[in-house]
Length: 199
Image (cartoon, rainbow, N blue to C red):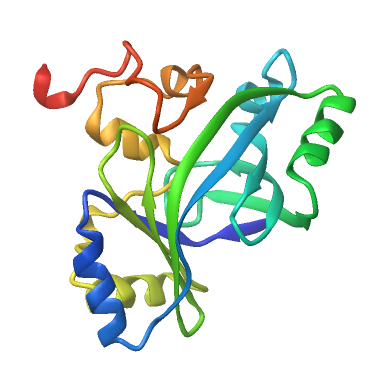
């Protein structure tokens, strides 16, 4: 599996980042669009419990991807991934179901994709959370340099999947996050999600 070298900066102003990206000569390769994804595991959740892993089908707007991910730790190098491109969101889901996996959650998000050389910069919005940015690059030095160019504080960067975004805003466990069967912009905030400022 390949290591994903990426870091997130939370609670950012996307408009300010867009201007900084333009000033740096970055290219917007995909405008803000709605993305949908379904996560899969075996009925006994063995991928999650034994390997901290999951399978995923994602409609990215311009392509459909199938991924398997494992999270060994929440560091810059802690996420491993195998990813392929397919031609059908629905058929990929059927394939997983045919080999015994079940869908655990359906998620909708919004994403705008930028490229600066070999650096991928994603402006992300998930339901019930503040906007954030995800930066993926070949190495830690490039990530740190990109944070600096965008006036982001690398010391406050977070690593891992989207649960770190929700846990920054809500007093919620990882299990409570992945117990949510639907995460869409039309769905209400789950009862288990208590904002930290409300406590």
